[in-house]
Image 1 (cartoon, rainbow, N blue to C red):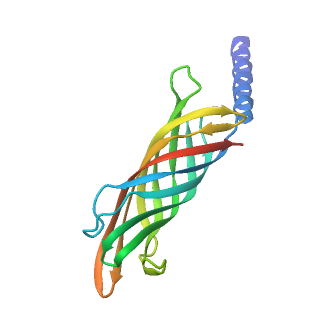
Image 2 (tube, helix red, strand yellow; image 1 turned 180 degrees about the vertical axis):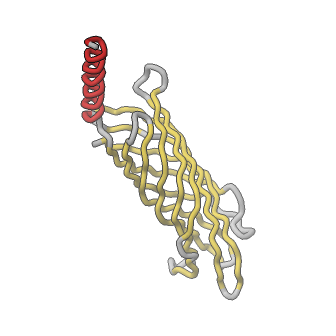
Image 3 (cartoon, one colour; image 1 turned 180 degrees about the horizontal axis):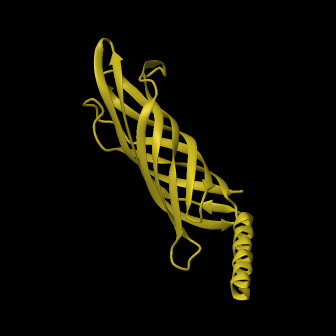
Length: 195
């Protein structure tokens, strides 16, 4: 009886010490990343130029290596010749959300991360004067990402990575109905602030 009581007390103390140690760690973070994007296919038979984008996301660590994220992003591709005329650009903007797994690389302070999530985005087509000539409206897509997290000190991290976005939206321009398949790979450099 005494052994069972003593074991229960030791277990309770260990659990409370672990909980206190975890609570002192920063569970929240904000990450800003930017970089170039390369299309993985044609957009309605249009070859897009190399693009550029950025993303800002909030992180919350739920478990030791698992967390959730939510944010907003923007990505733009230009095209020399398209159904919208010459010198148009395609902008994808909207929200990103998902799960993140982050784990140390051996005994190093550097961690790798993997993300799988959804998108709620839309695609705008702009002419050479910057006027919006088509907007697909928001819809669901998906995102996969991975990279490394390198501590810089004082709760700041450098987060280079790569991501793949996939979004399909219907559009109608000048009476022509079509599906835009907006798929691309992005190489990103980011800064994360933990708090």
